[in-house]
Image (cartoon, rainbow, N blue to C red; front, side, top):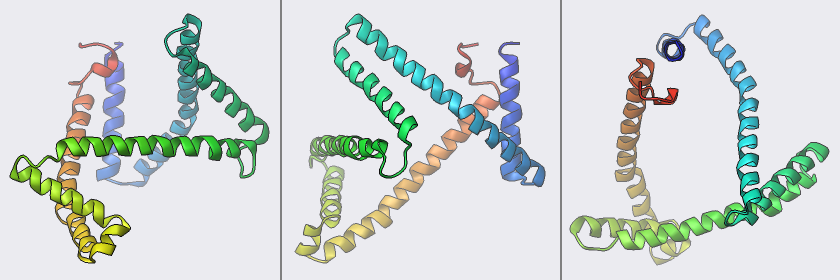
Length: 207
């Protein structure tokens, strides 16, 4: 019963959601509204569980003096400070919480994406070596798109931005739609496997 009951719940809820999408009615809409309200109630418990897990993991690292345990200390300190500041002064504009957000979180996010851009450029340099016709086409298209997205491309010639838009809106969009279609089919297949009880890994076992 420990496995049959969760499978029954998943199957019933899945069929109800499918019915709402393909056979919309007032009853299914009311059910969806009721379910979304319960989702909002359950959400905070998930946040509490995540915070507890974060504190437990980093506390154990600090206690064991694991490698780079200083980062765990900074993480817990930041969690405590931002939580206290948010509860005491609120999160409105002009509060200490927003000052911390704008002067710490935003610059750190920009730094992370800047490092990511350098990693992407490094990977592109390794991948876009003109060793074949396909790689050459990919290299030329990438150079045109990169030039067309910055002002230097417009300064060279107005054809570069126009070609960039064509590449993004025609071949690139066609590939994106193919990928999206494949992802959608994969999600549908996985959902059916879960609803029919074929996929049971989320139950914590193979059987």
